[in-house]
Length: 439
Image 1: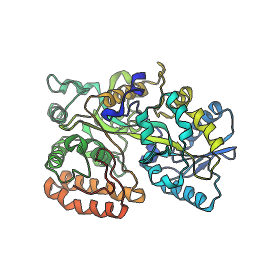
Image 2: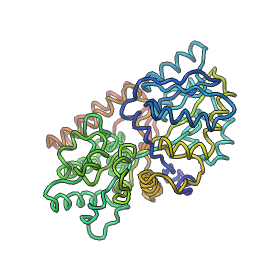
Image 3: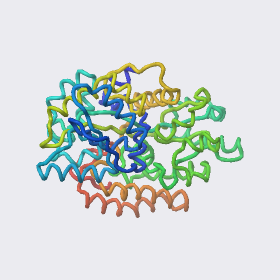
Image 4: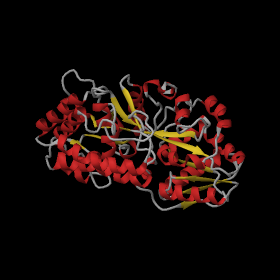
C-alpha cells in the first residue's frame, strides 16, 4: 500500500486516497456544531461533527498531540466555517488555532490564511508529496495549508454479479462500454436491474457526473460542457439508467440497497459503501470506476490544516506536526476512515470493508489512465446551484428521455450564470483559467 502514498501527481494521480467515513457528513450535510471545550489550541473543522466521529477524533487528539491541549470545534457547515473564520480575522481577535477543511472550503479563504511555508520541510519529511503540497498553495506562491487526509469514490460489487461480466473483461479496468454491457447482461439474466445509482434526494450522483462521467468522456467538465464528447457521455448515461433499479431515485447511501440485496453493483463514496460488506467482506469486492476515451476520471477529496492570519502559529504548528505523523494518520484511518497523506505502511488488521476500499482506491488512483477531478472549488453557497444543474440534466435526459445535446445546450446558460457570479478559476480537470467559463 505504501506505494499508493508516494506515487506522482504528474499523471494526475494524487495517491493514497481516503476511505472517508467521516467525509460523508460534509458531503451530505453536517450535523449541528460540536465543541469539546477549551484547550491551548482550538481545532476548528468542517469534519467530524457527528458525535461518534467527534469522540473518536478527540481521542486521537489526546493520544497523539502531546505538547498542547487541543479543544475541538466542528462546524455545522462550510458557510459557518467561512463566516466565523473571516469575522475573527477581520476583527483581529483570532481564537481559532488550526482551521481544517476540505480543499474547496479552504480555497476561497486564501487571503485570510497565514502562510505555513515553515512547515513544508516537515511535511515533506513525513512523505507528503510535492504535488499534494502544491495543491495546498491554492494557486499562490505560499503554502496556505498542510494536506491532512484524503477520500474518494469507487464501485462496490457483490461477487454474485461477476458471472455476468462481459467475456474477457477485467473488473478492475472496465471501459464504460463494458460497464454498460455488464449492467445490460445482468438485467437480462435476472429479469430485473441489479445495478443501482445514488439518485435519491441526498444522493451524491451529481459527483459522478462532475468527477467521473464527464471527465472520462470529455477530459473536462465545464470547459467541455457542450462538446460532442459530452453528448456521448450523457447518451451513455441514458442507456445505463435503463438498466438501473428504478428505485435508485430513492437511494442516498448505496450501502443500504447493496446490503439488502436489492442491487449487486453500485458506485458511491466509500463512506456510503463500507457498511455493505461489513458482515461478509469475503462476498464483496470494490473496484475502480470505468475508463472512458479521455481516461479514468475520478474525484479526489483532500482536506488540509491551515492557520488563520493573526492566530498563534507556533501553537498551531505543534498540532499540525503531530497530526501529520504516520501513526496519527493511520489511527485516523482506523477510527474515521480517512486515508493518510503521509508515507505510512497500512496495518494488515484493518477492518475488511476498509481493506476492500483501500485496494480499490489504490487501483483507481494508480491507473495509467487516472484523470483527477476535484469537487467544485470556490463556489461557496453556489455549490448547490452548480450541482443542481447536473441533477437537472440527469432528470431531463434519463428520467424524462430528453435529447442530451439539446438539454446540455439549454443548461449551459444556467452554468454560465452561476460561474459569472462566482468569478472563480477553473479547477481540475478543466484547464487553469482566471475565470472559469462554459465551453
